[in-house]
Image (cartoon, rainbow, N blue to C red; front, side, top):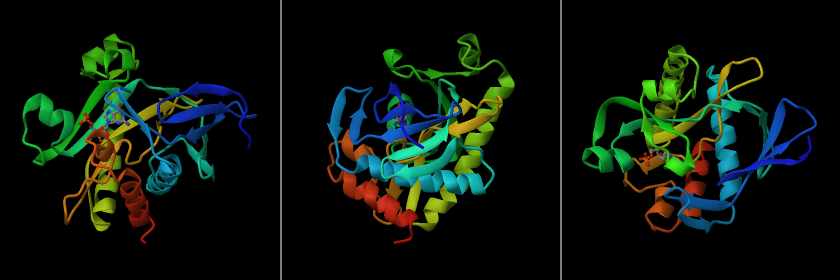
Length: 237
Ligand code: 5GP
């Protein structure tokens, strides 16, 4: 399957049409951005690592019954996937308090949460992805029905129930992550985008070391090495 015209360029991926109207190709870029695009850099090989990590995780989730947009990894930087209407809600899942939860509510960094927290952010760069509740989502028309919001929450928890023990076995704490969903040609809600250290936080269980994009956000260095470590642990190396 070959790339046709460029449909869209995001911060971390380019999206191309294919000869099949229901399939598209994502090209994973090496670009790194943070703070709503204010901090920018690039890390050679990052795109290929995220493509491989996302491929493995989408395959795992599919095996466990979560519908995703994944079809095939085409080469180092390219993934073939279903075309969807993206739902403009970022579904944030948290097991341990850090990042904006700590900043916004003052919950001490590193506090394990008594239960898994699921939040919604409005995917809108101009507004800086503000946090929203169900009523905001319905008023904005991001989905048509409350049922769909309940489904997003349910699917996000299922993903966490699969990925948290999976990474724990590999010595990584799945601290929090962001999921995106879309509707396929039949109107089914499926998991889309990517699952990688760009949108998940992983902390090494033994050392507490950060193994994700916080290394870039916080200027800690060693971004590519950390992403490689995450892939190697997934591959059991
Ligand atoms: P926080 O709200 O603490 O900044 O982020 C919570 C989790 O969601 C983190 O794992 C973070 O990587 C992810 N996340 C939240 N918003 C975004 C976003 O706009 N882009 C990406 N790539 N990840 C996000």
